Amino acid sequence: MHYATLEACLIDLEKHGHLLRIREEVDPDLEMAAIHLRVHARQGPALLFENVKGCKYRAASNLFGTLERSRFIFRDTLELVKKAIALKNDPTLALKRPVDFFSTGLHAMNAQPRRTAFSKKIFTAEIQLQDVPQIKHWPQDGGAFITLPQVYTENVLHPGIQQSNIGMYRIQVSGNEYVQNEEAGLHYQLHRGIGIHQTLAQQNNQPLKVSIFVGGPPAHSVAAVMPLPENMSETAFAGMLAGRRFRYAYEAGYCISQDADFVITGEVMPDVLKPEGPFGDHLGYYSLQHLFPVMQIKKVYAKENAIWPFTVVGRPPQEDTSFGALIHEITGTAIQHEIPGLKEVHAVDAAGVHPLLLAIGSERYTPYARDKKPAEILTIANHILGTSQLSLAKYVFIMAADHATVSTKDVPAFLQFMLAKIDTNRDLHFITKTTIDTLDYSGSALNEGSKMIIAAYGENLRQLESEIPVFLHSVDYFSNPVCIMPGIIAMKGGNYVSKEKATSELAAFQNACIPHLAELAGFPMIVICDDPNFLHTSLNNFLWVTFTRSNPAQDVSGIGAFIEDKHWGCRGPFIIDARLKPGYPPVLETDPETEKKMDRLFEKGGSLYSVK
Image (spheres, rainbow, N blue to C red):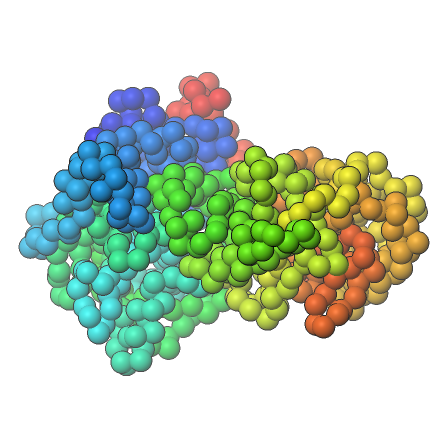
C-alpha cells in the first residue's frame, strides 16, 4: 500500500485488524499516555483516539508498536528500500545482480521531492498551538510535548530542500516560561543535523527557520529517525519508503510538507534559550530541566480532519524499540561497510541504547602471533566511538572470535563469551572527560562523562562460576551477594552519599577481597547496586541498572587496581558502582489515580476490553 495520508494508513490497519478506535472521551493529560503504555506492553494494536478532551482533533498512537506492524505498513516498499540502501553502500551490486536491482532503479524515482504550489485548499485552517492535543506523558513532565515531530531545517548558506535536514526532537508546547501559542522548546541532542544548521545560522547572525511537520504518511516519521548514508536526504528516503514523492511547497519562506496533517513554522533566534523539561525519556528516567533553544512560532496549519500522531517513551522496551528494530532491518550491514573489520554491532535497547553497545570485530593484524590479544578490535572500537550516533556509546564490549557462533543479539551468551576471556590487567580502556548522551545523567554534567572499552580476544582465561564465595556474605559495607549469571555478582550497597564516601567504602571492600583472589577467579565482574534482587529478577533489570547508573571513569574500580604507564588495570574482578547517586533524576512511574481511572476502558464494555 502507498499511503498518501495518515488516515489512509489507519483505515488500512483497521481493515486488517491492526487498529482499535477509542470513542470514549480521554484526557490528554496523562490518560492517553497511560492507555498507550498498557496497550504497547501487551503488544496490542495501533490506537485512534476519537474523542480527545478539550480538542477537536483526533490522535493516533502505537502505530509502530511492533516490528510486524511496521513490516505490514511498508509491505510494498520495504524490500525495495533495503535494496536501495544496500546499493548505496555497494554500487557494484547493480553489476553483480542486475535483475535483482532493476526495480530498485525504477522505484528510486520516488526519491526526488516534488515541489508544488502552496494552497489553502490543502491546509484549510490556521490554528494555534493550544488547539492541538496537549499531551502530557508522565506526572512530572514540564508540560505538553510533541513526540513524533518531523523537524525540518535548511542550510542558510545553501538554502533549498537538497541540503535540508529532517530530524525527530521532542518539542515542548506548554509550561515553564514559554509564552502560550508564541513559543515552543526545541530539544535536540548531540550529533544531530539541526545542530550544524543552527551553528551556520548563528555564525551568519541569522535566525534559523524551522518547520515542524506532524502526521502524514508513516514513512515520513520513519525518515526523521533514520541514520542515513552520506548524501541521502530524509526527503528522498521518505519518498522511497512511502512509494510516492515527498510533496512540498514554500509559504512566507518556510518549507511546508503538503502531505503532513499539521505544519508549525517559526524561527530559532541566535542565543535565545529557555528552560525545557522535565520529560520522561527513553532511559527510564526524567530528563531534567535545562536551557535549550526556543522556537518563535509564526503560523500553525492544519488540514481538515487532521490526525495528531504521538508516542510515549519510557524505560525500554517502548514503541521506539520497534523503531530501532525497523531501522536495523532497513540499514542491514551499512555500519559494517563504514567501519572496516566490524562484523556485528548491537546498541542494547534494554540498557537505554547508548549506555551499552556490543560489537564483534576482526583480528587480522598479526595472524602469525602465538599470543592472541586485542589489537584490531581496539582500532574498531575507536572507530565506532567516532561514528555518528554510535559515538554516544558509553560502555563498548567488543570481541573477536575466529570460529565462534555467538552473536551480539544474544546478550547473555555474548557477555559469557567475553567474561571468560577478559584480562582485567590489560583489556579495560577508559576515555575520560568526553561527551555522552544528553539524556544520560550518570556523568559529571549535561553531555559530559566518560566511556569504557572492554575488549576480549584469545583463549579462555577462566571458568565462570555461579557459587558465591563464602567470605562475601560477611564483608563490611556491601551485602546480599547474588549471582546474576555465571561470572557476575551483584551486591547491595548503602545509600550513595558522596564520591568520597563511596571511594572509602570500595577501598575497604577491595582490601577485604585481596586475600580471596583465588576464590573470585570465576567472577571477573561485580556490580554494587541498591537492590541485587531486582537485578536478579530479569536480564533487562540488570542491564538497565548497571549501565544507566554508572559513569565509567568515576564508578568503575577493581580489586588489586594499579596504573602502569597511564593504563589502568586490576588483578581481580572489576567493579561497577551502579547505585543511584545524588542529583540523579527520578525513575519514571505512572500516576496511580490515572491508572485506576483508565481501568474502565479495559473492563467489559470498554473500547480496549479485547486487548489482553
